[in-house]
Image (cartoon, rainbow, N blue to C red; front, top):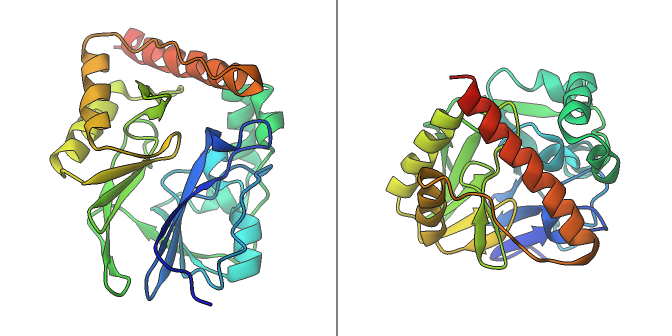
Amino acid sequence: MPCKGIHAISSGPVEFPELVYSFVICDDKTVMIDSGVSNSVMDISFLDKLDYLVLTHIHVDHVGGVSELVQRYKPKIILYEGFSKYLEDTTHLNASARNVLGDLLDIYGEVDPVKGGEFLEVKGGEELKLGKYTMKIYYTPGHAKHHISILIDDILYSGDSVGGRYNGIPFPTTPPPLDYDKYIESLRLQISLNPRMVGLSHGGFVSSNHMEEHLNQLIKGDYRVNIDLGGTAGELLNKLLEINYSGIAKSQNAK
């Protein structure tokens, strides 16, 4: 039976499944946005097909499931131009992740190489007809120089380009190496799109007001937050937040 509607799917590790979200949009063409971590608990048993797999950027918490999805569904993989080579050979990707994340990479799992994938490289500005809806692609660098965001049916899927949100509290998604000015520029761009909803890779679906809140906390320098999740989930989030804070500090110190 064909899938219907829009789905936010927990694709983080078993220790904190909601640490990462992937999204599935069902139309004549079925789209998944990001694939979570390698050690994901993601359940996509409802999918009978997958036409497009969009990767907002090539970080291990977004591309861990690509190899398995390609083997199972053979989707076209949409990503920023020049970066498919990092999925065909994941040595550099995993080494960079180890350098930034440390032992968090053991919880996420290293990324397997993608064999036989069909890549569709983009640079922003492209539109793809899915059926009833059209997928619009925007170049949104800052978090990563190869970051893209997706707009479908006036819902923005922002990857890590507009922060994250848990317990109603926005926070920066800014690990090193970060281009802080580009991050702010991309955030402003996506605010200007005026979407009716935003799908955050770290937080799920939220009101578009989140973006203004996040911009204001950055402008005020009030981005260090206290999000009390408790237990292992809280420990993992706090580790990630410290990494993200360090990205802002390093980017600003480099000016």
